[in-house]
Length: 393
Image 1 (cartoon, rainbow, N blue to C red):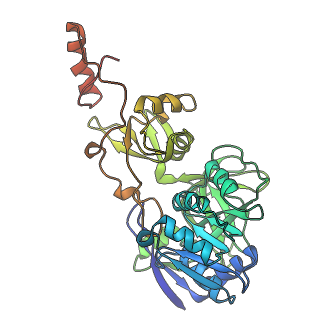
Image 2 (image 1 turned 30 degrees about the vertical axis):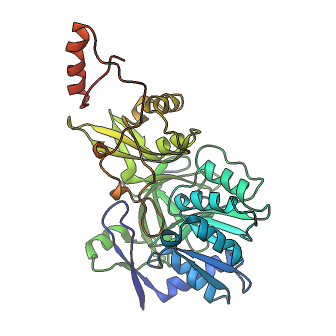
Image 3 (image 1 turned 60 degrees about the vertical axis):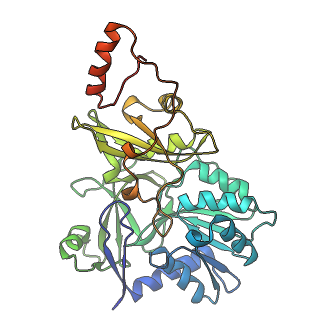
C-alpha cells in the first residue's frame, strides 16, 4: 500500500517521484534503530526540508523509538545559530550531506561548549578523507562517524563505521559493508557480475525498496528489474559505479554520468574534486564537464577559497599536476563564494552559474605579446583554445 511519493533533488537531472510503501519505511526505520542504537534518550537533528528521503529516517527513527526531533533551518538561521541549537538542545544524532557537514562542523568547533553528538551519518555525496579529519578534530572521542551509501529508491545499502582510531587510505572513504536485506551487486553493461576489484554499476537486490516512479512506467521498467533467480526480490540499477573488494567492502566511484571522455581517456570527475580539496587554501570544490566551441569536452572547476585570499589558477593547476594526469586537470578555474545547494544541503550542479559570467581565478599579471612573432601566434592559440586572450607563457 502506497505511503507517499517523494521527489529526488534533481541536482543532476530531472526530479523523479519515488513511490514508497509502509513496509519499506518500517524496514528503513528498523535498520537505523538497530544499527545506530536509537533509544528514547536520543535527540535527532532534522536539518533543512522534510521533503527529501533522508528526513524519513530522522522523523520516524525518532518518533517510533520515543526519541525527540530537533528541527533546524540552516538557510534561515545560519550555521552559527544551528550549531548553537545542536549544543543547547543536546542533539545526539546528526545527519546531513558532507557539503553541509563541513560548514556546520566548523561552526560547532568555534563554540566553547562541547556538543553531545554521539553519532554522525553522512550520505548523498562522497565522503572525503578531509571530512574524517574534520570529524576527529571537532567531536568528542566517543563520537562515531558513519559513511552511509543510500538512494531514495532503496534506502541505505552500505555503511562504513569510523572512530577516532580509524585510518583512511586514499582520498575517499569506502562505502563499506552490507546492510541486512540489501544485497549489493556490481555489474557490467551486460548485467553480469564483474568480479573483485573491477569497476561496474552498483545494483541492489532486495525485497525492501521502492515499487517504482510516480507516473513513469518506462523509467520504472528500465531501473527496476525482476530477479532472474526467481527469489521474489527485485534488482534496482542505481546508476552509480563501484568496486567490490575481496573482503566484501564496497568502494564508491561516483555516478556513471560523472564519467567523461577527455581526449580519449575515461575521467572520473570526483577524483579531480578530491585532489583540489586537499590544497591548503581550498575549502570546497566542484568539477563539471562542458563542451567547448570546438565540440570537445573540458573540465571546469568551481573553487571556494579557504580564507580571504583566492588561490591563483596557475597554482591550482600546478598542485593538481603533481597528482593527476593532464586529462584530469580542469581547463578553467572559477572562484565562487559558495556552492549552490539544494534545500536539503546537497550540491546542486544544475544551478552552478556559467563560467563566463564569473571572475576567473586570479593568476600572475598578464604579459601581452611583444614581438611580431608573438603577436601573430597569440590570436591563433586564442582561437584554437577558445580563449579571449593568450599571454606569452
